[in-house]
Length: 281
Image 1 (tube, one colour):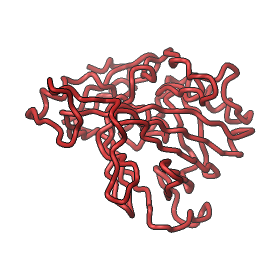
Image 2: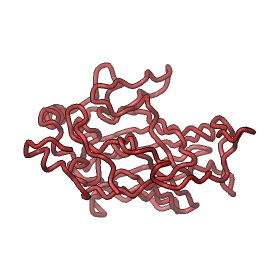
Image 3: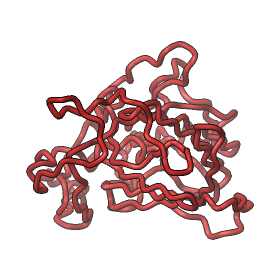
């Protein structure tokens, strides 16, 4: 089943305008959730841990409302001393001076945005930009094992692997560039550090078209603050597209007593009609 496609602001993108999850799946109470006597989840309960003592990142996670998908939405201001919050439409929304683009990258973003982002991979049922997956309004499930972490994105049925078996990050250009890049992870205390490279050269970080290239190396710091909150600090180091590295934060909130649904992007896809001038229904 596919969620609704609509024109959101300047671009037609996949949006979470579907019926509540409870209408899609039979009700089932998520096991292992700390609850009050009335059965409500205790979201500020301590961080759960795996058998080897590491924070357990497993679960279904949602982007909070403060990092929404409105075309002109500004993120909630980040607390002092923390990275700016990104939004689905604009990774640089929290930077007063914008992102540190190389001149060609600034021009490319303007060109993509002026074209109503019609070439955004998401709009064509392809894997979307690296940051768009983190900020998409549809949920994602993290499955954690000692040697591999898998993230399943409901949006466009995305699938990402993070290797935790001690391997090194391969040099850029060694494996074939991937939509999701090549990711390796390691624990530093209670923080999961994930490094990614070998990305495609034509990437979109966000809906507005902030680019990334095959020279990008992306570092993510995952911290499960408590039972209900996940913080991810993401540093983009791409000297081909930006004059210096920059860091943004993405917050995630746990989703309990619900499930992800099947998402087949090409099913009933009306975006080609939209591009031909017919309003998507």
